[in-house]
Image (cartoon, helix red, strand yellow):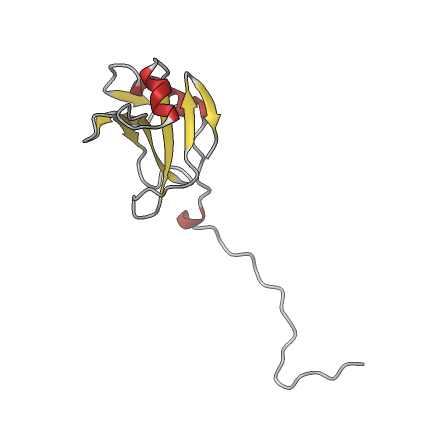
Length: 131
């Protein structure tokens, strides 16, 4: 038999913690929403409506690429979707110059800055790389 440690209490059964707004499970960006944004980026549309009714603006970046910034905190991870920059010297840019419609899914950190890893890609209306 083991000796009891002095001052140690037996564990009590605690009540489950009440859920708060901070515990809300955030949805992931759906494939349908990602494809809707992709099609809007590669059209002349100024906005895109997501499945839940949220309207997101399509804007033009300084490098002349169209993009959609998802509202921060709306999904489980922050992201922006951006058309391929055709001025770059990459294989994706070469395909885009040849007519492919390429959109990158760029994960953002909590501060809104993007990293250089785990980018997703939609090419010609299909998910080419998950992030």
